[in-house]
Length: 615
Image 1 (tube, rainbow, N blue to C red):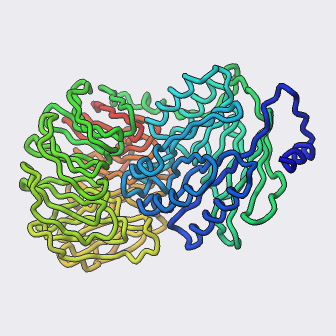
Image 2 (image 1 turned 90 degrees about the vertical axis):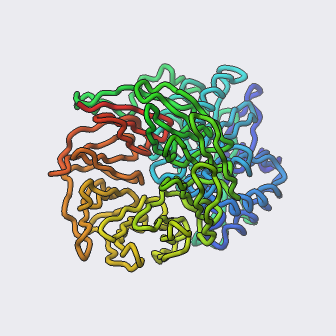
Image 3 (image 1 turned 180 degrees about the vertical axis):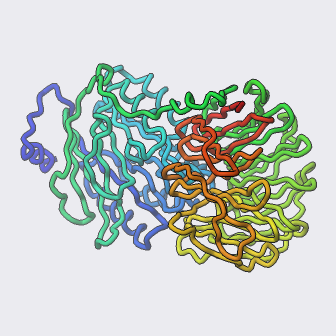
């Protein structure tokens, strides 16, 4: 401990008898196992370096453990971290959740939880997940984690216990619900926030709370990776960079730790406004349902019920008139599968490796797969069609769950809702490819690869549309493609001029246009018959920067546009002008479901279902 004592003297610290004993720990972040070829070596080097330092009491790892959230990547990271000779605490990042083949379920299985909490040196450390989970958008602390954090802080060993909060994201508007976590923390003695995500070291400030971003463990353009050694005294925190095998660096960041008494702070900080809802009196809220967890799917309606799912594993029915829960059936894992319904049979998949079929809230059958399932089913002609995370796409008998055929050559996992058109079934996957199968036999009709070098550019999340013998997709490579639906031949493939398409699209009611929402916040209508990408319709409305992959839809001459900030925009089909807006949440819209003549149910990622009525 001699060098630690000299460090305090060099910093001019006077530690009184009543102060907490100083301690050190390692802050590791953004290891991205599965990305760069050197990522594994970088983490192993860091683990060896930490093990060689007896002054380090524990290790925190603040997210982006893997590149793609793949099961193999998570298990490899766990195997390396298990060789640490001191306690370690971990939370997921956006890369562990957004492209997860298991719906972020494997992170919980491998590491035990997606939240973490422990006490050391008189401090409570508390960490939550950051999202976005399974749908591209800004980050979002899952609603169940907000509930967990609230409960944790309400039951502190003592009311004034100092709190250090951990999250992968900086606690600002890069997370849709940053304010929910901040507002909870400020009701208590929060003194510091630690994060990753930016891959570089930064001293930050989050609404008066000191914040420190730790660098990525990756070496990037350097010859060796790195992490940070953190020293906490009774009233200060100091950060020093450490490269494995090299001497520790000098202090690059420090902050005072004290009770800010935020309860008496009168400073005004930005919070999302819902005032827009008062500008359109023709739109009113009928009811709102709040789940205890996130809702990561759209919904379906069956007679008097709205059918939904959530990430606490529930498939449930609400009374469409009141929003009251009628029944629920709990699966064994998170559900990111938008349900399908036909003849009263309700089908959805769960990350517990089962596809479920219910009727009146009771189990009819369940079909076991070899990996967690996150794709949406489609029902047609008494058959269920659904992709998996195990390389399979299956057809099951709706009434019994009997396997009718199994296509076992999918490279990557499926998350989208397949499209049935012209005797074929079409779907993409997070393995670069788009597939067309014969829906009767499961035979491969054609397969197309977009040539991307990154799996994150795969044509996986958009729901394809088809008309006039053509199939249309958009993808994160910002290119839109039109195919001959029967042969897979590319008719045209193009970027929209000066616009960035991504994953959100839908077919117009007359099939003349494919609506596309761009990342630039522009909504366009692309001709379904032209020999090249031709924009025949363009709304003058500016949505702002947009990422939500949710499908657009048209009903009764109104184009309904979902956004990643919880607002639904209604545009006139004829001229594209704004008719109304409704903000249901500040979190991403998963789906917009018409349930009556002028009623819609809006699903948002923070676990809300909101029914609105439009006069």
